[in-house]
Length: 448
Ligand SMILES: Cc1ncc(COP(=O)(O)O)c(C=O)c1O
Image 1: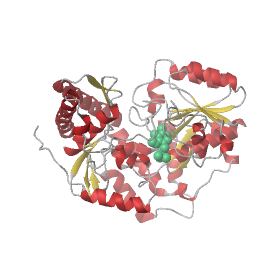
Image 2 (image 1 turned 90 degrees about the horizontal axis):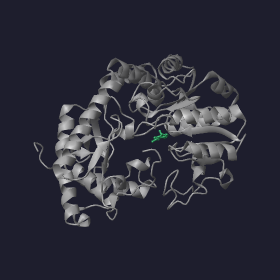
Image 3 (image 1 turned 90 degrees about the vertical axis):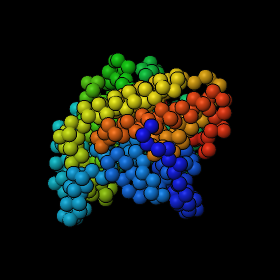
Image 4 (image 1 turned 180 degrees about the vertical axis):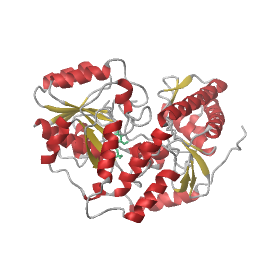
């Protein structure tokens, strides 16, 4: 390994985290940013600057970043072209009293890029855009119930799906979440279904015939959908007069500019996009067919900052740069390179497992005996990677700024980290090798 093992000093990060704990309930604004989502005590928690594929934490340690703001960064941190466009826009005004022509320019770009888009509304984030999509679908159909599959944000309409699910053992929408603060009156308004199970969707549509406004789902996450699955769901939606909504907040942009719908050829009635579309600047959009979107003009869907120019210009520039730089093809190559490097690392250590999934989102899956606590194994991996200057989970989000050097260094670090995992397993001593609390998952995603 060319890169020396780092034992990072992360004192400043954890001093800040303790201060945050006294001021900010839950420490962070996004659950996935909490220290216990990584190796709590070893992984960095606060950054001071980021550029390209790397960031520097508040203790001056540099890391290769495979989390990339949970997928919100796709070109690389602080991309010169996007940031240049944003800075120029700031000089012209970040928000106007009047509307900005950029709203129309971006709408035209989205209509040209996303197969399901004929009309467009904006938000500033993904969950918010999902809430808009739910409102439009209910308003357009005059129905209340929504079937969901995957993660669609924090809003009441969606979290109501957790009523009726045991938060400890419940399989979906995700374990470990109680709908505290969500009105009881919404119980039953949103019903989760299992990914890949079209028969379950058919059953739910029959059970609630004439009441289902929409089927909202993540069409994919780390694997492409099984053949025919999305087309089957679309047929069911059409047969029951329900609006089919693809939530492409996480799966969009990377495999193709047109998202999973472009890859599979299955076009929904409505699509939600956000995150990578604006390379880290707040932006979200709901796009859809004229028939479904047009009724929205009669609905109260309105917010001051949805007219902000920064997200608009960032999204326009990011989409054009992704096209100009052949983003999806390059992300495919980067992902394949990473997958190969991680698989070599697995083979070298003699562990059983594979790095698999879409090249745009490879994920490490170790074959472990049933008696072994997987969370401990994966936390140990994250801990050992952090010690070697690699900030990652077990699934990896590349950006266009990740090159051969980052892939090689990550592969070398993984060989060492997995070597530690192997020793810990052989010695039946995970607890001894773990210097941190075990990673806690607040929710488990339905679509993997
Ligand atoms: C599929 C999906 N939908 C919605 C959201 C929520 O987006 P945001 O965090 O921008 O509100 C996320 C975020 O992870 C997501 O992955």
